[in-house]
Image (tube, rainbow, N blue to C red; front, top):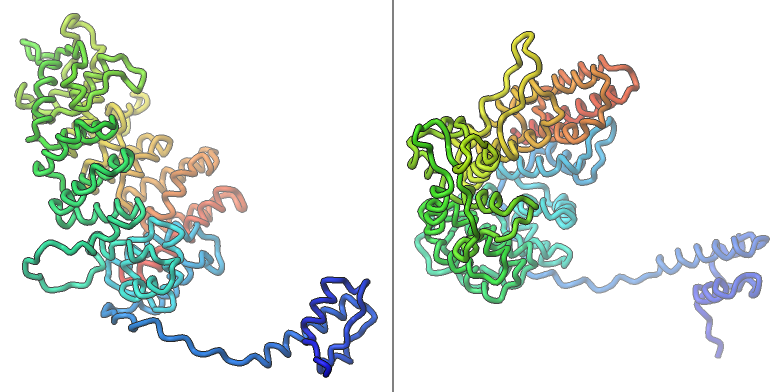
Length: 541
């Protein structure tokens, strides 16, 4: 009995051996006679194509798979408007389809935040793409998971690539959670509610603890306390950072115990957290040391500084390292650490002076009152304390008034008097005040030193701040500077500049030299602003 060999197998064998070593086989395929055999290699490929079509045409259907359990729960949120859904599709693909725009990936977080704040849900067809984007960019996950809603969680149960959804809190800040009636007091949450903490990756554990602290600080502390002894030192350090949410005097016993941790970084972080609690025992101890180190002269005209002479065991337990990690002198280091950890209320209480008056006083050495060598150290430590304790009054005093243009003929404007990092002090102030101070700074000093200040301002920027930035960019273009000398600021403007400034930027693009770097830069920025304006309008923002 003769067995007919599968044409595909004979072609496969011929391809492996080569047409120079084996002639083309007789396959008996339909239309095989029409293949031109003058070039054996080409003929082999044509026969393979015929065989492939024949195999596919004759394929039998496979049995239907069983449905994957219950269907996805219903999502009661309103669906995105059609235009907003199309915009999301564009952002997920990263292709705008014409025009010169910024990197659309940088605009996706803004779109997600706006859509989430309005409690909208994307079409089901876009949720896989949304989850893929969140898988690649962890910073998108809280918003993406909240927007994907119950369907996203259902899909994550079917696809292992999206399992991060099941470990990501659905609504860390509560924006996307649908309104539900207040539930009566319930017993302690079941253990399975803390699955991300017990089974998740490190970043997921930090996120879970942070969310829990925002909702129930005591429960978050108890969760951390339960595994604290078994955590790695580097993990304990970041878990302590998560306690900043909802930090209160109730956390003091745990943090006091952490002052004896075997890791010096954990001890330092615990001490920093305790220093932000004015009523803590550590804050009281630091206040006593600070008053010993700084006092008001009897005449009340200046401050006298006497830095610590040693870093004793008690100071070390309270987070002061005996050796300076910055290369500064040891006494200057100890002094700065003590003053930065002392409650700022210590100084008005002990001197009767306001922060503005204290900062304006001359600073002298307790031995040589004519020396002012400790002035910068004192103001830098006060600045650190203002940031750590989020004290707007002290931050405002240390920053000084918003810059103003110099009077005619008086020379250049002076830089702000703030010691340390002005951007960190600025971040302590209310958002509107931050924007106004930064706008004034840019009007006087330009963009050269404004990158960090702009980073401290809430996006999108206010119209006055946006106008100041656009005006400064126009001055930079007119001065002959190149756009890449302000690349950091320009990158920030694409996602933070008020969309209402698009018309002004278009005027700059039209007025720039055609095909120049500034012309292209302004055109790109204007197109991005128009894109953002349309994007937000579609969401009803």
